Image 1 (tube, rainbow, N blue to C red):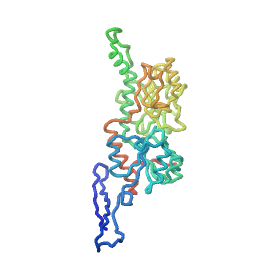
Image 2: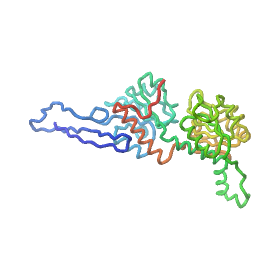
Image 3: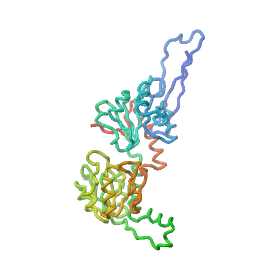
Image 4: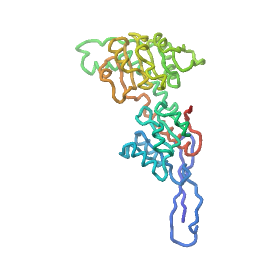
Amino acid sequence: MIVLYYYYIESTLPKKRVIFYEVQVEWCGGGGAGGKSVSTMASPSGAGKPPAVLLLRPVDPPFAVALRERYRVLDLLSSGQPLPAFLAAAAAAPDPPRAAVVMGGGSIRADAALFDAVPSLRCVVSTAAGVDHIDLAECARRGVVVANSGTVYSGDVADHAVGMVIDVMRRVSAAERYVRRGLWPVQGDYPLGSKVSGKRVGIIGLGNIGSLIAKRLEAFGCVISYNSRNPKRSLPYTYYADVRALAADSDVLVVSCALNSETRHIVGGEVLDALGEGGVVVNVGRGANVDEAALVRALREGRIAGAGLDVFEGEPKVSPELREMENVVLTPHVAVWTAESRSDLRDHTVANLDAFFSGDPLLTPVMLP
């Protein structure tokens, strides 16, 4: 037997590594190794071939290429199979997957059902910062490590949130539609919006994204206050333990918190009433952070002035009433996405997978209970 080695050097990730693969060629001549086993250097799986990865979310072509260059990718979408059949086939493979790539806000959860279907899984890498789609307690019980996207697109979400604040208050999108419909020469000047500078902004969730939103709006001269699990003593902003009190002292309420049992519908009818008829809500967190039915009623009845929503409770389905309201700005859960953030997320996901298969610490591990 002849054993040939080839290698490539990874240079697009934070830490360069040389990865070796082996090719074994049987031949019929005498001598040589005589059929004896030969010691080899192997791929990151240590098995002489690329490790298997379960891909449970759609990815763009460059992302798919980056994964397939390093791993044997078992792709749910391209398989054309129903989820149960796909998972059963993956689990029955000679080299079953030890890692899965999942997405936030998707219909597939990383929970007991997934781990029962594919018992070999020991790592879940999420392409989202939030982990409401992952059962962390179940991961801890089964010894499954978890990584998320970290701060890859925090700045992009903050930019989008500020853009929505400006759009809703200055009525930018609505005014643009007014011009496109040819109404300007017919109906005259468009109704005035409200200035952004100097407004009181309450932020629900002052984590990495919330803090970046606060810094950006400070540049507009806005007065920042916030609600979070605990007060941030090092920050100069006013802390409110009660969300209704925060809303009552705000002109704009920005939602940027994670989704859990405590934050589901954290913005409901009472909070919207406290915000008042001149108030604006912007949600770049999770759709279920806001009671959407209560929001529709408040907008319809004029109890708040407007809303900017990048996330929705039933997405991709969006309430017909919301779609028809001129004082509402809607985007299809794209706050995280720019050309730059998509590329960064691709590299970040691959780096987390490489770390797992190499036995190194994950780049952005999620704390398990």
